[in-house]
Image (tube, rainbow, N blue to C red):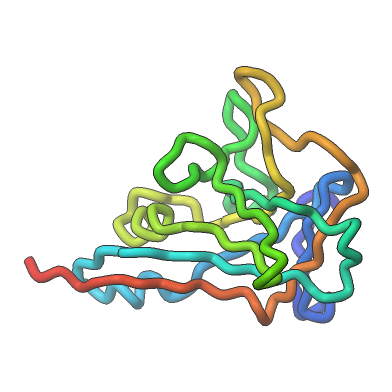
Length: 170
């Protein structure tokens, strides 16, 4: 059903992303509050690395994935007057998008600012959605454009965050 969440433990530890069906992978980042533990933290670098399952045919695999804000509790993308509410790429004004790297067989998102904003309380969403690549539909609207059959099955056990941080004395 639309907006229904299915745990990866019920899908052989896979999560799915597909344009035509509107499938996205919901992700939460646990333990960030515990990491802070009443200390001041500076996030030097943070990367979200997701790996597709090996059973996805290369000619059907999505080349790019994007990060979108989830509407807390509804399992749907958060929308604004301009379309999907997306996370910005690091150091730019575009969408936070990762391209499939055929050497490492992964998609890698730079989420440094996002993690710093979550830790500091400036980012209030508790749901991140990994979606097909989003793009500008017009000069004032964003959404999904393109094919309907390409997809990716992500291996839930191989999803990881590399986090480099420093404690700050005040």
